[in-house]
Image 1: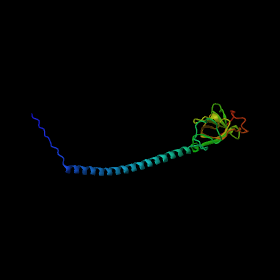
Image 2 (image 1 turned 180 degrees about the vertical axis):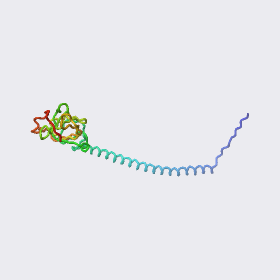
Image 3 (image 1 turned 45 degrees about the vertical axis):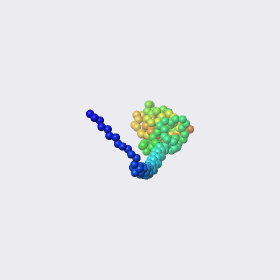
Image 4 (image 1 turned 90 degrees about the vertical axis):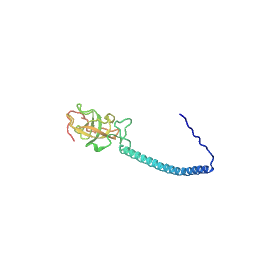
Length: 194
């Protein structure tokens, strides 16, 4: 088998040189067009980034506003459990009063009635007006000796006239005094319901 090689003779042709130069000039000129479209793309991307940043900022501000609306009347987000110093106006538990159909206000004291309730709310009118309290959402111990307003759900008690599961507590007075007619608080003869 015989290999055949063809050799092409290269010669310098000035007309071809000019054609190549014209071709290069056209490429450079066309290079400006992609550069202009790159500028347009950059501008479009910049606008999209600004819009995305603005949308993110608006979304975060709305989220922050929602958290503020869930804050207590003191402007501080509600806590489930009272920690640290408790001040008048502080609210603990659920952020919504309307979540609970029952509410009462009085002097909170430790102790229930024969195993019903962990605390009691002493109110004007004597022991028959006491509200016995439990809470599945906040620790009531921190409110002992304070005048509070509570919201919750009433349950039928065996011995307590009014037994409430507390879901929200608002501190009315930190250093409160019990009602004058509550001396017989905790006696087994209590009854009545509001």
